[in-house]
Image: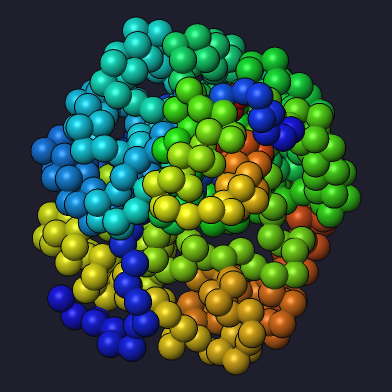
Length: 89
Length: 380
Ligand code: SF4
Ligand code: SF4
């Protein structure tokens, strides 16, 4: 299982991405499971709205943070996310 | 409240709330994790009490919520509580035996905002399931599992493993796949509460355990991407204990049916904790300041060999309930650890179970029901 660059990526409908006020961070929720996210990971997942493919997600985030060279980090994180079932194509 | 521990490093908020709505249960599993003397605790929190608890815990940071018991479906206000949880932003899990569940109820709970239903099945065939559950329930449980899927919930199937069903591993896996489980929890019995009483009859042999684990691990790969398998090991056959509650008072908050707040669902049996009640204190007072929740926070309470062990941040010295049950000392190193000088008690338990297999007159299982609970907790 790995990311297909041709296809758009969307957050899994059986998981929930939610802002936690008490902890000041985003979390992923699923049956009896909870993953606490750092800010970068949360920003990447928020781009997984089903309209963008890998290259577009990278471009969006590089623009948002006014930086370059995020390709490897973002791709690696999305591979993990796909493997864990947090996102799908 | 008394018992403030000043040398705690950092206090983290509760993130999991286990709401044990009731001790009432139509089933009688002989490995139930409820306290053996549960029949002595007759009072139950009211609907308003539970709503207050949910609100206060959510404010502190709890986000995963388990409705369990006993059998939570015996509480008529379950849909109302689910609705309250939904409005607060919890992810709510219903942990049920399926007994008493109807399709109408599944639809009602979905509308109220329930996120997920975990159904437990005792075995892969009717005869053993109904024997272990002490109640005829197999056919209905499978029906419930179908409804859960049909109405769009993620479905977790939970099977508690012990000597009588661990040999069915292949069939259990096939059943889970056939039922369309999204997650399969294969939980080896943990020997507290009723399971401790029945240990000689429930503890599998090492050979049984190893065979079952190999089958489950192989299946895991076969169903990767379709069904997730969680395998909870029986720590009697490990040489390190499990990490107690991810750190005492760090993550988990259990509220018992009568409102007693527990750092772990078995903590009621530990002496001297003085577990507080939500009728007397707010969740914030309980979590931050109570004696019970500070008792094993950090590592100042530890004895040797844990105190100077370089693995103490990993397993926190193991399970406090297990240490107490098996060594009589709640500060002792969990005897499962190979560094414990009392590892011998685990070996004795394994041998005791082995003797029971070989003996002609196997003693009978003690089922979890009101009658046995009363007899065992109020000996004459
Ligand atoms: S000695 Fe204590 S801290 Fe060290 S591994 Fe064993 S149980 Fe864990
Ligand atoms: S010692 Fe820890 S893991 Fe064990 S039963 Fe108690 S709280 Fe749970």
